[in-house]
Image: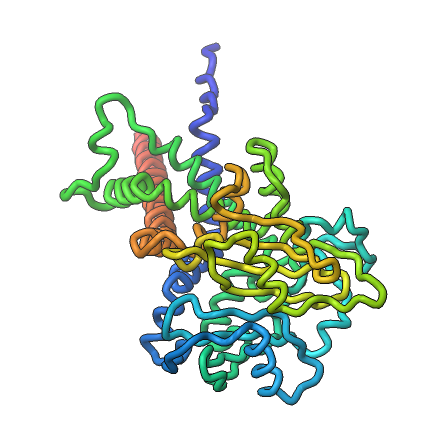
Length: 428
């Protein structure tokens, strides 16, 4: 009795192809949504200005007023005593307004909640370090735009509203509150990284075919057109695609990615120091004012100018003062000075000039993801990294569908031949 054909051995390439195919098909719509919304958000503020929805100008000429004066002007502009000042910002450039953020009502009495916190238990200081709050301190806040010279109120606005808020919330957490939505988005980013890595392996050309692997031939059509377009777009955009998606995963899982980076390039836990730095209140000693804190911070970076201050919301919270040097690009890491407002002391300084390699990598994650801080060309490349995801989705789906259709047509033809042969045999 003749032995049947041996079963075909499954190779690494086969399994990677299956992984690549089914991740793409199953997550096709969510991934397309992430790409489109991300691309729109890259130019959201530019679109707002084109539509006349951007921040108004501040045209008064003169010396900018102090942070404390800006805060007092903002306080006078609201009648809600439940809102407290949480941040103040000088203009990044001439002609822009200054801004003061007033908290959502009652925020000062809220208990801090972090992602992964069980049963509403209060985290110990050591456990809370570096963790991500379930709700942004800016959520529900009120932004008061102020002329930095005349202190005239230019505009009062809720924190990011309208169509930009819609795209931001959809892209950032799928409208799911409490941290779960952001984690789901993070796993979509992981899926995109897997698609990028597996796609590179599957694209890798055989000897003598390297030149053809980078282009789409004019005469290509059908399955070949989609395959060549899928591969060529993928390889030309791979670096920016992987970079933007890695930084997106960081924004979803900052403590895990920071720990991984710091295990390779040791550095300070900047997120813990900046966002969860704690101080011990001193009985009978009032905290220092924002102007005094700015002057104290300035002694550490005399070559820089004030940009912003994040105020203490609770008695045990440190103050953060931001500075920038001449030539600073909006979105690039700023100098951050952490202040103990009771002891009038500098706790730490995070200066891009003196950061370690690991600290620099972590500090740039947000700017790299949003396409800010590195000029217009990089911003456009980040936009492209979102636009190409629908291209991958369409070409990948068409490749699968055409192959499936051809396979079915082949099976139908085979069955027809077998049926005709059987009928001919029966007729004999």
